[in-house]
Image (tube, rainbow, N blue to C red; front, side, top):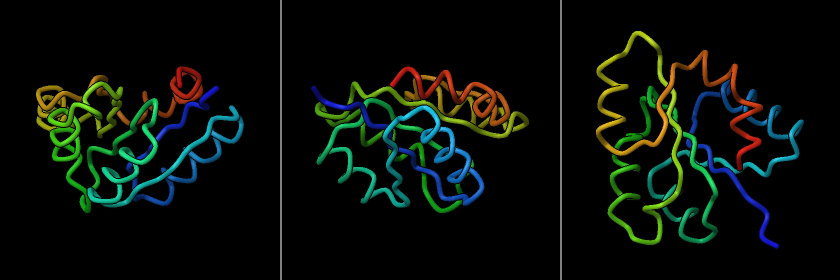
Length: 120
């Protein structure tokens, strides 16, 4: 049996810590990537059941990652969840257009985190 793994493309220490803590509580394996190249390499080496994206990460172009995923047949079907500041409607619209499966406000994402991790 393959254990589902979530890949989080998050660079912020506070968010990483919150994700790690919730994953530990739910016994959900979680990996982190902090660059486009590492994220794509990680996905190709061990396909995650879900990818979590911080859409406001200034160091990583989350939409470029999603574009690369959607154009690669081996990665195209991986479920993606992106979170953003609720006031950044342009980012939210762009993420949906890029193919992010679920886009939500950061506060809603963290409120729903146990349920989200439970889906993996």
